[in-house]
Length: 350
Image (cartoon, rainbow, N blue to C red):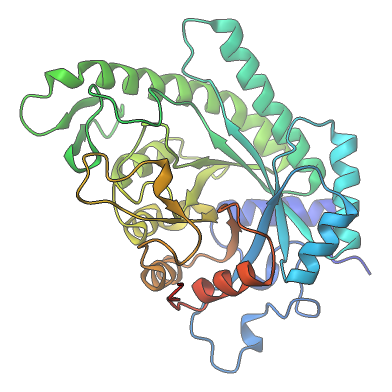
């Protein structure tokens, strides 16, 4: 018998996941016989919540799935979003054959704030709709979306340093008035672009919600290095502004560590978290920017307090997936490091 639920059951479960009320044993594509995920199966569980391990892949294929199952992964997130539903459906069948779940589709970077080029902006919105349709066919209940970005990965003079950020915004309109203490006139360009990004992204995502609801696919907005919504309280306000179960938080536990500790992001985002990524980061408190892209590390090789992160996930009742995004070999060693996080343990590597 297939491990996957019927389409009707899947849509119902997707709504429950989006509402943050799906229990571990109800997660589609998993059961207590092949992965022993039932919380009741543990004699004395350390945490009340269950987290499942996923790898990020390109297009689904037999060889990759065989190696992931051998390593100990339970599911995957695919970057192959720009595919027809028929091809995605074939990928779902392939995953099912190996007892794996394609739980999410990484749409990634969009261009919703390109208000000067309406054709390019609409193309980006249409591409996101393609990703939503693909996700439904894959059997995934989420797409990962980065609505837009401003600036670059390098620190710019017109953007506050991470430690300088103190964002003052209107809780109703989300319009930003100030981003740092004192005279922040030098950040006028940043404030203007932040406000454009918020308004334009809100419009685009609201336009996509009906399709997401129809197909049972959550739009998971990711916190990422796009220089937008960089503090927990502001990011949370942006996600919650949609007031819709089909727009949730895709929380990357390694991103934005230089703006606030990951456990604070978890606590702030709370039940809006639909999925998580994991990677480590070495915060450089002596530098202006807190660390560059070169400061990303493999799991347990940065200074993220993983045991605190795991406790926070348990506190907010997060039952769901954790996909590795470190670029490490997807092997037994990566599984060991992910298991340590799931068990609330801090490893000493090297």
